[in-house]
Image (cartoon, rainbow, N blue to C red; front, side, top):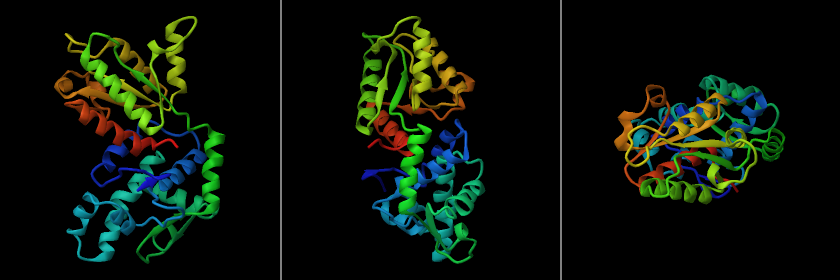
Length: 293
């Protein structure tokens, strides 16, 4: 599956992770929800105006979607229903920050479809019991994506990284370089407070950069010789959470039990080495925020 030709790693095994991450921010208006449903469908396309259906998802993936469901159901309709209800709809609900699966169905059935932004033939998006289901972005829908993107100013490429800065800490330097490589590969610009110019108080600049960022990456791995997350990072984490910013916490697996109780509620990426960190961070950003053009 591709967004402007770039792979989106949605699967039955990571839908839950996407949903959990999405709950940390709620859009302000129905128009933002419209945008996010359209953008999520766009992420799933392999080509212009591709009809998205349970079967097309499985053909596009050689992963656990087909493995999990194809062997479980002999009946084609049962199979399609299961992929629709357990993968596609939850994914669209998560990406649009919808409260329930029913909300995203209504956004499509009573909003995007009557307005001509999507075409949905048969199935629950069209008040019909006939299966299989599919949904397709229309040319008008592609125009609306660009219109809403500019109007709502949702697509800044800045990402604030909250982390300790120790030049002599090899692990932290490797973490920083890995984050930088991932963001650059996905088309985002890394904002690190010790690398920018500012006047006045540093805390004002930090708060301003967090406000203006698309999302925030918080490195909870402690500095060398310590066992608890850096206090400055914790402040920036809390401030971003208070703004309902998307937050991607990162932490070395060996410090998993050292995290504060409240932080453990967030969907933290735990890693054992930089290769695992790179893979998991890339997948998280692609699945939640997509790849910048």
